[in-house]
Amino acid sequence: MTEIDKIALIEIKEHKILSTKSIGRTKYYIPGGKREKNETDEQTLIREIKEELSVDVIPGTLEYVGTFKAQSDGAKDGVLVKMTCYKAKYKGDLTANSEIEEIKWLNLKDIDLISEVDKIIFGHLAEIGEIN
Image (cartoon, rainbow, N blue to C red; front, side):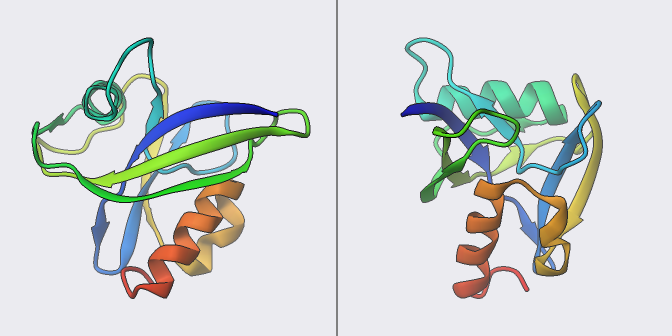
């Protein structure tokens, strides 16, 4: 089995979670991305969120939410995405940047719009009362 190592930002407001859609994609994803060689979780999250959303994650504010695995969208069977999720404080205004086409706040009614791993994350967040 192949595993894609990703780090993601969990940002929740009014029981909805921040999600993004990349240019040319149909599904929404929790913002974040792949770790580069020798990066820590915090370094990856800071870099990816700056690239995608134009905000600065504040070092030292990461709060671990969980690690989730599922089949990677668009990949051959057996390719899993491992998403390690954190909440974190940030400075700036959320603005779609780089490959991000749209920012949207989603909840459980939007489950058909998201990736397989995000469905697991949404379920976990609903179970603990964070989203509805």
